[in-house]
Image (cartoon, rainbow, N blue to C red; front, side, top):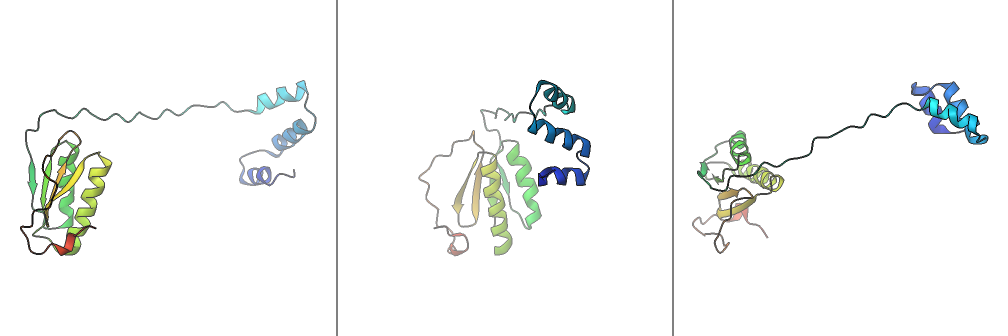
Length: 155
């Protein structure tokens, strides 16, 4: 029993010492009778079937847009639940502290990336989360309505 892996398996109780010795003999003298003993020792394998990730078809017509004025970070749950349903969400962060607002923007960025959507800045503290089936047209520049652009500037 020179193989450390086999010794560890025996120590952990994952293999019997007899099985290890039989495998050592099989490796030393390959013959038809020893190949039969290896087949007996093999356990049946049960394949694991993972459910395929099925993305639900998004509705082709946008019936509503949700506007959220979060006051605390825990309001992110409302944003996530509606965005998962395919509803575009406008987030106005003007009522939040800068630290919580940054956390919420990071959360919204991850949410939009994970669900194949987009996040766009409308003003310095207003963001639009749009699902993958919603096209947003415009020039893509940030409207400079608020003089305090510094907290969320991106390079």
